[in-house]
Image 1 (spheres, helix red, strand yellow):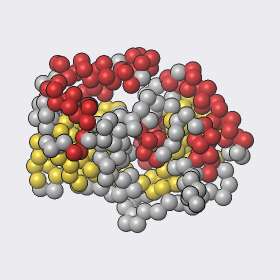
Image 2: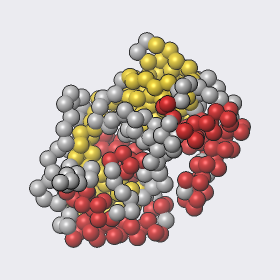
Image 3: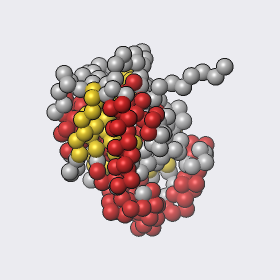
Image 4: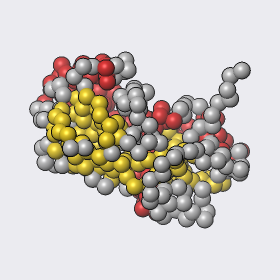
Amino acid sequence: MLENSLIPSIEASPIPTRPRRVLIVHNPTAGRHKRRRLIGVVDRLEQLGCAVTVRETAKRGDAEDFAASVDPALFDAVIAAGGDGTVNEVLNGLALAGGGLALGVLPLGTANVLACEIGLDPRDGEQVARAIAFGPARRVHLGTANRRRFLLMAGAGLDAEVVAGLNVTLKRHAGKLAYVVEGLKQAVGYDFPILTIRADGVTYEGRMVVACKGRFYGGPFVAAPDANLEDPMLEICILPAAGVTGMLRYGIALPLGKLTELPEVQVIKAKSIIITGPRGAPVQGDGDIVARLPAEIAIADETVDLICPEEPPAAD
């Protein structure tokens, strides 16, 4: 449920007393094997008693339009079946609709960062189905990048250039390898311009900056260990190194969970920042280009009820 005010004390919504009525918005570009995963989850949802409607997107923007037009009298939640970009479109559509529906995810993407964040295993169809049907909903705060909402992260610099230049066909066939290929290509030709970040009256400089609402980045890699979707705060990672050597250093530290321990990396907390740099340079949000520099990245006024897996029973 989207609301227009921040809530100081964030708690999980009660577990539903009946199976949810869900609209599943499916991005079909994921491939045949992921379609089979979708069908398996839909079948299980129906066995659990859910009323399920599936709509497939045909082009960019469809997921947002579908979510914006959903009747809250007919559905309890909109489920994004795709990657984090599909989640972002559904999120923005729900914001346009003005509230009344929860957001869920059926992870079928390349990185599935949101699934990592909430402890949802994309390969476990039973867990995914039970979460959608009966899982508690956490009230989480959204971010904005030039007024475009995001759930996980937004950033500028090399990562945004990689997203902007990514070969969609290669991504469809090679998955995460496509990001590696584009990252190497961009790192060789990119001039790593200085970005200026202003936060709470203090000015910082870096070659890349990522404002995080969640802990994970690029998949199961922790970039912002103290970030929390439920907190009305951004955790901002500022990376100052330029060139291929610097990016390789960060690329090695990230999967080892050591990125924020590097002495040159700055981590700050703020409710909003302003990033300036080359005018028109891309800003990525949740893995898609959502804005251009200069950009204000901030905590949004809205919150959303995010469907999460049921808590496992405590060990004896």
